[in-house]
Length: 81
Image (cartoon, rainbow, N blue to C red; front, side, top):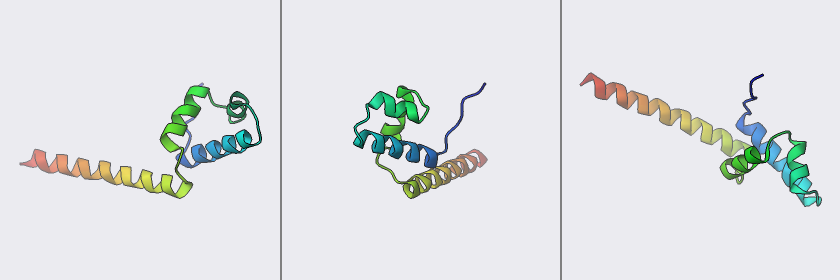
C-alpha cells in the first residue's frame, strides 16, 4: 500500500490541530498520533510549514511552479543557441 501524499493545505490544518491539542495540555506524542503521522513527519512538516497560513502555502506552491517553468524556459533557450 502506497503512502498518502498530503496537500500543503492539509498539512497546515493538521499542524494547527496539533497546536490546539498541545494548548489543551495533551502530550506531544498523543497529539501527533491524532493526526495519523509519524513524529518524524510531524517535525519535518513543522519545520517546512510551521509559520505559514493556508493562503501563504498556496502562494508558495504557485511561485515554485512558476520558478520551475521559468527555469525550463531558460534551459530551452540556452540549448537553442
